[in-house]
Image (cartoon, rainbow over all chains, first blue to last red; front, side):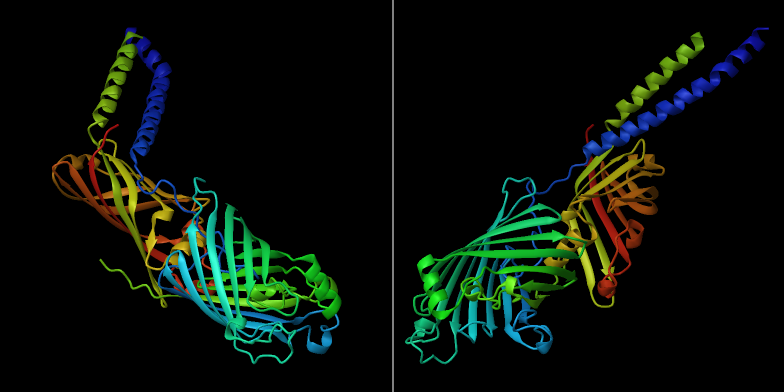
Length: 326
Length: 186
């Protein structure tokens, strides 16, 4: 009798008992894993730097905070064609492709991860042509992931010298009396923030000094550039930039009334495509020139009049870092 | 009824003893090295992180590896940027992780060299995949050294290589793990 009772008893409760053990065993093993995870100690720098705020050293017209790394060489070609529409565009010159307004070929070299020097040659798009450029970019502040440093800041400075023959016309910007008349200087503070992995924004206060200008034009000019990048896929992004120069109204009016040269703000929109070591930009901008000393101060063409052009840039990076073997 | 109660008490006792016992047989490694190597026609790619963390428990056999993707260093910094930006998407998936079990882990209580089977789940790029591999262990005076090597197929973890750069990156990457464990606390 008691034996039967025992059997009944166990058949009724054994299941619960086993279930309880299984559940407990599972929960205890889960706890063990969690506890073990707490033991995993990941050392390393606490505030990590934000990388790839922008992908290239340029947006369209503006420079970015990006520098190339130490012992890297960046070869870059910028090309602007002629007007797509308007009186100078259309079918007769294949929407500007038959003309080129400016071509710039440049090399940048990374002395340190945050310090680049560069040289370039540009056709030049305004009165002053045949430009040689020397530049330096120094990124002295880098945004961190924990926002202790909220922005990246770089200084960009360039000097251009024109190699063209001096003009006889005394009112021309190319009327060079002395060698120093051929020199122009650009200083920019590039402030950028990567708001998310898909969106970065930059603001670029700029000071431009031209040793010699056309009659009654400004030698010194302040401007502010604004630019942004929105990722549309893993390797493609939309980029745009805009430069607002602060011209003296009296000089601007004089230039417009006497010489008929109107000034516009440079606006560029484009598509950035990244493929391994190359970065392509396909863009549209009303600026005819590539260099800061020209497109900021002397953009005479207007989007509104159809005076925008197709442009592209190709940047290719080469690394000269030796393989470090242990 | 009484018998069951005794079972419960016994079970709890054993259970708590097990927890107690665990305190002495967890080992941690805070500067484990994880490296990977990809050989492709155009370019060999190699990267290494010395900042991986790991912990193992001899009594349960549990083992955990965790590494921050941004801690991998490449000879070419541009590759490092591409690795984080385009392939690993380190903003979205900052860590790679392995959670698994060591078979016959209790052997590691004694000095000697062992090759034990480790099975578990590898999480890379937010995608989990089961792995089984043989791992060499060397135990000497409460210091455990491990060396493991296994292949990871990029497509298994939804890491896609655009055809334009396909020739530069191999589809299968050899991963090596090198860790030294010392007594950890819990």
